[in-house]
Figure 1 (cartoon, rainbow, N blue to C red):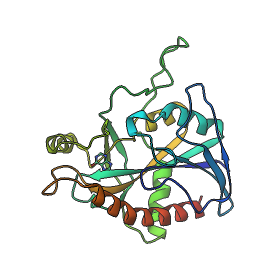
Figure 2 (tube, helix red, strand yellow):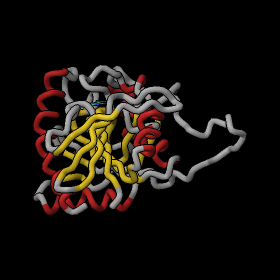
Figure 3 (cartoon, rainbow, N blue to C red):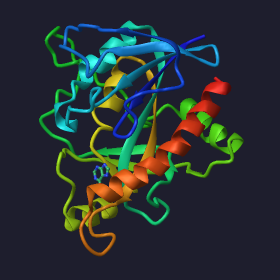
Figure 4 (cartoon, rainbow, N blue to C red):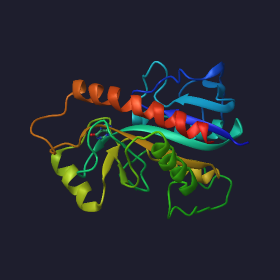
Length: 246
Ligand code: HPA
């Protein structure tokens, strides 16, 4: 059986359901990952957990060492990654506290170390990125949601911004015109690095708020925390259901 990894984002810095957990620190040629990896079992299946922003949460999205995180997961023998991410909702279905399984991505980030193939070894490699997310893992998440009687948006385009600031209302309007359904700060280069190393990767997006300008007034941290609190309850149920069928 292939090992599953869960990368936890804002609102998910621990996986309390892991049995027999042990921590492992891994140094990589790219530096240190965000945190120690917590390795254990859920329903007798081997699961690796990583807190993307560190535990306690301290690393902002643009400072995350995505290459070290993905390299270390590969080193641990992980084949499948479910990446949980807090995001803002842009299109009408992406209601705060709801869940989505994105199927596409647009990268608005800059200045991040975003590839393992930077020409140092003299070879130029261009991975295919037509379908950024693993269709099989996405289908598994959608089925798991049905089994657990949870509503998820089964598709959506994730727009990844640089952060750490939230967007202006005009930026969200532009992203919507571009075709984005939701906006987050950590989906890239995580997804493409996983693909570069041949790992299967799917995202589970949790709506923390409406994107800037979608409601009157400004976005508050209090509303983000409140929505994430609710969204994470269903995230935990969905992950349990997914792992039961894994
Ligand atoms: N924008 C970008 N990233 C986010 C947001 C947002 O509105 N909410 C949670 N992560």
